Length: 438
Image 1 (spheres, rainbow, N blue to C red):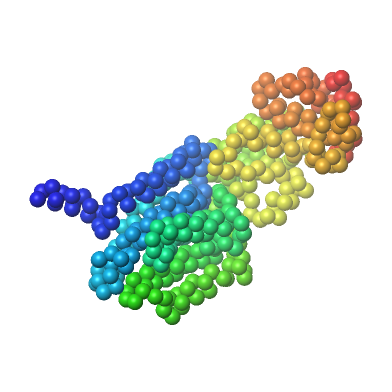
Image 2 (image 1 turned 90 degrees about the vertical axis):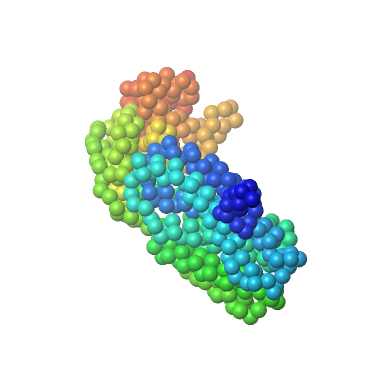
């Protein structure tokens, strides 16, 4: 008797589902979530805006697993051939399907939230900005609604075919934002990762939350009604479908703005070599690396009007026009985001600001130095070599060992740039003109 009682007590959190049917998907979801977020724990510049977006982005695969599990539960435990699942059985009236959905959804969502704990701790310790509760609630509500959609597939399709149907349907739904922006309001994630200085559109967030609440309610009501005798679609079921479809139409008639600029912090600035450097106060730790990596590039180029007056963190921007007008205003905008690598990005961005784009050479962006290269491709190679040489100045012993600028002396290159700056701007310098290259 004690053994039977202990088995019953152990299965209580899973009742009326077999524990294995719950634990397998829950463990898979936990593993997927940890694997998806583990590399982010050591990222630079973590912030709460990024975390708020990750709650939906990281759910893309876990919700597919949970949906398949819910479809399997419904397909196996509500089919009419089971003795306890006959239409006249009161257990199937309402309580049993709701209990199915509660157990499978609770375990899968709980496993997903547990998997997010390490990232939450990392952002709490080092992160800046403010959390977006509407975005998080919308994503978690969507998780629940899509799991219920899987359960509905299992009820309607019946049999194991319901599992691939549910998995395929939810995978498509979660992938649609990557195809077209209007679908973002009906899915868990944005098509890109937001970061400090931005926020998800308020209209988009509340619409997503409302849509998924409506979807979850409609599915729950449809399932409980459909499992009553007789099992067939009724006008009320059709009405539920019409309401959900109608609610999904507005984003396609008027696309919600996805993001908006958020002025939620001050700026921290410093100056070196006549250039002012400013970052969002949440990125204070990134200011020193930006200066250390950008200043040598500007110094190597030498005094010139081409040097920017200011280098600013994109998180400080307030409008698109402000960023797009940066070239005319002498402002170099640098995108500091979670996971960025300043040692790779800052030298390249600083050098690219100083050197004209290769397309000015008419070579379609191609730079070649072989025997069959066209004249414009050879001139483009001069610009490409200069940009690579400037970027290498950001590092100690950053001598360029190969290419057109191999072994070139710093002062010699600066003098050459000063004499040929106007010709470089229109891509008129031939490789043979370089005094250190033969």
